[in-house]
Structures are given as C-alpha cells and as structure tokens.
Length: 331
Image 1 (tube, one colour):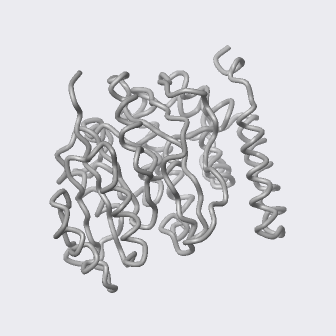
Image 2 (cartoon, rainbow, N blue to C red):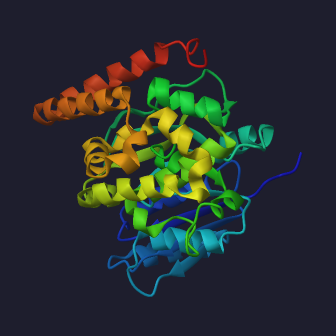
C-alpha cells in the first residue's frame, strides 16, 4: 500500500495564548505530517516568538510571515500553494486535534483512495474550560466511505454537511485545484464559507470517508472569523448559487439541491431567491422552506434561554441522533 503524505497548514493571527496547545496537538500525532506550515498573518502579539520557539525544536515546522494582515482566506491559499503533501489538514490556531487524528483519518483514506476527504467528530470546548458537547451528526458505528449520492442523502435525512467540522477534515490537495478561481484554491469572495463550498463540492464529486470518533476540538470563543462575516451572508449565498449554476460546478448542482444543506444559511436563502426567483427557484422546495422557518423560530427561542440550557439541550439532541437508525437513509 502506498504511503500518502500530509501537510498541515495553520494560519495564525494573534492567537499566542492558544498556539502552544494547537502546536503540541499536531506535533504529538501518531501519524507524523510531512510538514507543518504555519503562516503568521501580521500578528501584533508574541505569536511569532511562540512559533519560533517550537520551530527550533521541531524541524517539521516551516514558518512563513505575511507582509501584512491579509486575512485567513489569503493565508490558507498561500499555505495550500506551499504544501507538498498529498493530503491537507487546514488547522485553526485556536483549536487543536488529538494524537490519533491523522492516523485514523489516513487509515480510512488508504482503504478508499477514491474519496476526496475524511471527516471525524469534533468536540466543543468553552475557551480554556470544560468540554460542552460533541459537534457531530452520528452517521455510522465504524469508519466507512459514503459515495457522492449517499452524501446527498445524509444531507437530506440528517442535515449533514461537510465543512461544519472545522479542523476535523483531511482533504486531497489535488482536488482543490479544480475548485479555485483566478489562481486561488479557496474562493476569496466566499469569505467565511469558502471552505464549506469547496469541501462540499469535493464530497459531492468523490465521496467522503467518515471516522466516528471525537478527535478534534473546536474552541468556543468570541470574535471568530465566521461570526464577523454575518453581515455579508446574502452576498455569500448569492455567490454560491451563481457558482453552482455555472458550467464549472453544474455537475454537483443537483446534489446540493437534493441534500438541502443550503438551509445552513437560513433566511438569507429566502431573501436571495425572492430577489431573483426565476434564476434561483431551483434552490428551494417545501421541505427546505419549512426547515429554514423552523430554525428561525428555534433561534428566537434559543436567544432568550441561558447557556446552561443550551448545553443540556444539545447533549440530549446528540444522544437522540446517536440512536437514530440508518436503515431508512438510502431506501
């Protein structure tokens, strides 16, 4: 069996306090990466000093500095361009992975070389405090492969979408070349959802491997990049729709529509479709409208409840999803 290599790419901007944990998570992997590319995006704290200290002790680390703060999408694209590995882990500097993450991911990918990526479960941690819950939708009892058709059904039945797992995804680098526009692997105009779009396109073209273990940790902090882009959501939804309607992505259009994962953008979808119904009507059906409206109602109720109730509800929801049978999924 051919051994495939992994490049880890980590953009960083002012995450000095979290960097040691994130770096140790990568360096402790039982399946060692070919290289660990860290790109500092103009940090004003002591991030570079922290990274340099680790780099002196670990030759696998390659540190690069942007000439100024250019944003996470630019920085990720630069890292992808620099990477030499067959597969990529785009890791966040304020999150971390557990020691067997790469080993488990690469093991299942070796069994299904046709797959475009591998995903695992993520756990949510409150800043530096307690673990709150798993960020996951339970899909199977054992590591396995889902075809593009099965992935669309997972979206329809369970609301599953690739890209919501953050640093729990390992993706085949060669396939990102087919996603990019104007020399960029991830499309800058899509801002915080550029990875959501790219990873789901790859999944709907090549299928995904699934590892039913919590091997990545998402740190719940304020001021994240995705939350800062919420005011641009209508533009992002329109951008995704226009791309899917273009010849380059027409092959995955039906799977995006079938899966219904566009409900992720909630009322933004309704506004975009209503502004140009003739062009975008194919992105809506009754079930998606119902899901979007129910999510809006839930969000209003959610906003008035204390966070302790949030955590209890999400834990109960996770237990319920883990009991849901997969029998009807592909019938």
